[in-house]
Image (cartoon, rainbow, N blue to C red; front, side, top):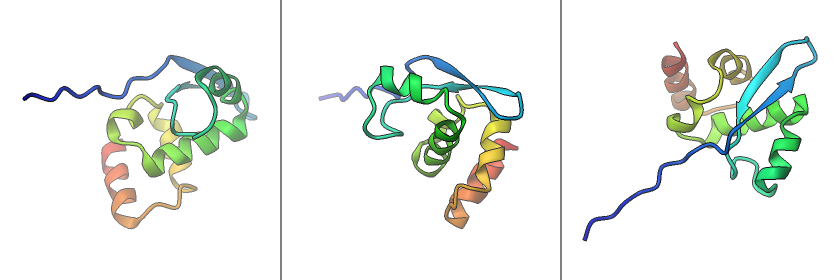
Length: 97
């Protein structure tokens, strides 16, 4: 019997205005932040502190298939705060280069 796997897909994107006047477009993946629904997540991601936490959690847990939908410069900016295992941090730096 063959198994078919459903790959992770984003539920759209959200723009977040950062304090520096810069805007970041983030993909919406339910499950990175555990409890909010998709609608709640869209609203939460418009706040810069939630967007940063969401990105850091994605760097810690999400596979590359998910991470490649984030802006690379934003991932790179959050990478230092992510507190990753050395091997994961090295792999992500390689993939982001």
